[in-house]
Length: 296
Picture 1 (cartoon, rainbow, N blue to C red):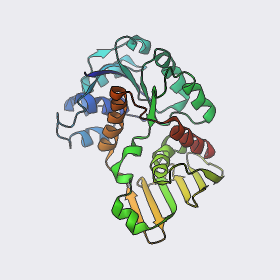
Picture 2 (picture 1 turned 45 degrees about the vertical axis):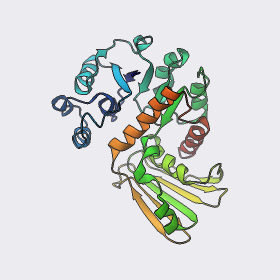
Picture 3 (picture 1 turned 90 degrees about the horizontal axis):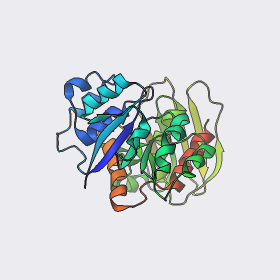
């Protein structure tokens, strides 16, 4: 069975309605050049189509706040229908991709679909406070209806290999950097770092210097004895990277492959629907938002 998806966008600076839809549907290379996000056609053209598509789902409907933009996304990513109102997707699709990263609007757009019982992938960050997160989860009709993540949670480039683990020894400190703002991009380094910590590790102390402009810093000491340091550099130039230091050595991990991370995250979402499995645990998402809120 092919899962029918509806996609909702677009927030400023976020081209996910184009790229996510293309990962399911393939794309029109000529139209995609005009998407406004030059990096998207560049990494799409490096893939082998149609083999690179996710096979068990299709984006069939799109809504954005601008009809012309919606039609261009549809043309670029081969989406069959443009709807006038996002609620019109109810009854026409099996699940929703809320491809906007403006957390303050997530409840507004997600509410009708949560009440209708549709599985929904909410783009990162799902919320910037635990209070707002709980408002979303209060609308869940069943456990696992909400899926959310930074796609970098699934990035192979930001996972420790067995060889890395042997080289590092016992982890003592993890330091991570991301360009751009704390509110929208810190989630990209928090999630892969959490994956490196012992299961059920908990913060025992957090320190966040005053945030200025778009930058942000958060230092966390964990029950395991590990210290994590998160830096969002605002307009500062840096690759998205993580240094993991241990008793025997260190490794540097750098993120470059957006397509694979997006595809693996989207595949996890549709797989969770197919096998009725919770693919995005509330406990993990709650810890992510708690750290985000601590750095604001």
